[in-house]
Amino acid sequence: MATIQLRIDSATKKSAKNILDKLGIDMSSAIKIYLKQIVINKGIPFKVITENGMTVGEEQEILKAVEEAEKGINVTKPMDPDEAIEYLKKL
Image: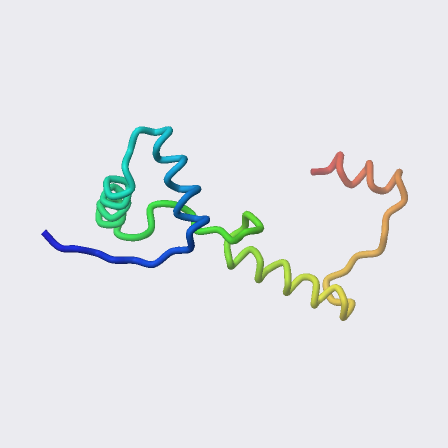
């Protein structure tokens, strides 16, 4: 057996412990499950997201789109309501 030590802020530890307690799983068992799932999946067993609920790649795409829009790149003219309805019907 090996030992792992990790440091985490108190608020995260407390929040995770509260959730795990409701599930009936202790912290050590939860971490063991997580590590076993990394091995089984050959990587992180879930989508890693930021605080905004997006992946880092999705956030980068949005920032790129904002930058392009500010430069007038890949921007279409506004549609009047009739044009918008016709556009949506074609989708």
